[in-house]
Image 1 (cartoon, rainbow, N blue to C red):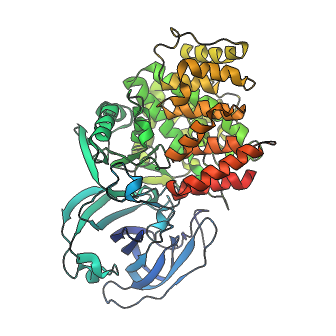
Image 2 (cartoon, one colour):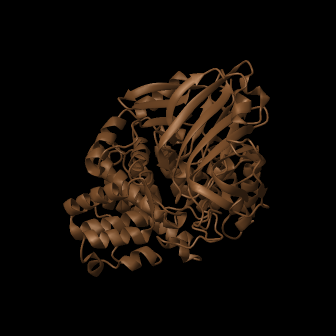
Image 3 (cartoon, rainbow, N blue to C red):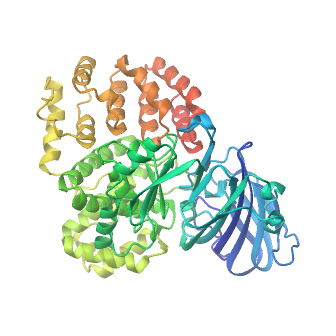
Length: 612
């Protein structure tokens, strides 16, 4: 076996998948998908062929032409990877797998009606990054293998479906279609069912496979953008207002990075349990409702997911060990877009918050500095467990360092050439460095490229922000220890980012009474901007200010975004002499667990296991 990815059973000596045709029957009563996957290969193959699966029950593998069975075996579950499906092929270029998903699929969250906004119909959605596509369909689940796919989703007719793919049609299922598709369910053509068909014509890494099904509505916000969400007018209207500037961002992205290759850039606001801030699924970005802040500042996450349309979706890291190629580039691209669309001040604040976050992450990994490297060894490591801001912010700092060395005009030309050269490809850091040296001769004598990509911590030539707004807010934060409370005229025009940066730069050794005094004036613990609220609550927990533990509990029970769960649960359980906090955290998790997405459940469980 010649593995190409520490998180996958994919074998480099075997052909790659060129296309997957999926038929998916959604059984909401059992939280199961009855499915078939027609898998086509780049060339015929004889011998074993390996696919990744997780918690899938494989019913059969057949030859689609002769309808004869093909021998297969499914291994025992391997931690992190799941189970290897081995299919014994004899000069086959395609084969059909029928299977069912598990109610405990790590990629799927099934919501009952009471967990939705309107509380009338169920809802289901995917989150496949980083290695969870295998929990929806058997595949070579590595970003090194890009696939095209089509999908037919059989759903109750009261619901509608969206996918990160082009919508083809919505129609009634055809009689006997289930037998032809071999999806193993005689209810395919039952009354009260609809089929939604989609196609993804560009090759994408499997983690970008995405769908959502529920009672959905939408609002048009631009010539190539609709905002989708649960069909509640107030939610849809708020989302449309927040993201009204999307088309300006797309146009700016095209100026900076070249043509937008994905035709549509639609947005889906998911229920509060969605575990990430945004997921860059092509054509249909998924967003947490915490991005609807009421002042259009939530559009910055949209800028990030849009930037992925070039860096991440168009050019992809070959494995998660090179994740910075996705996120460092995208963070850089996001801030360039924000700088033009929202102004230099917004971009400077974002860089300042990122710098603070990078320093905090280096502190978090002080006992395992491997994960402060841009290229890191993830053999035997669950990528969800070591997810951090390092690939985002250290990667951003690396690209900023190159820009400072060669000048922005030269770097902009380099970026356009880089994207045009590697679009629709998956690459590693070595490929990028070779391209950099070939196109900016002598760069390796001016910047220590090895230190930046393979060294631990923050390199000495990284660039702490020096903007006036950043310095002013950091100074104000430092002065808080001496009793300096912000004047109202100083914060009159502050939005969430200013408050977030301020809170993150408060001294560690402050009194509970000082924090209460700050909150009594500015009501930060009740902020509708969760970045502000969670930064405040994290500080309250750290200094043992129990006045806010009711707000901590409420927050942990109403939002499933890991960016907030991780720091709040960690603050509650880390350190000695915190038995009361640990009991508190354990109780909240036991009560909130079913609300969280399976990926978020796993992250919180690993935090509690480490400290309890």
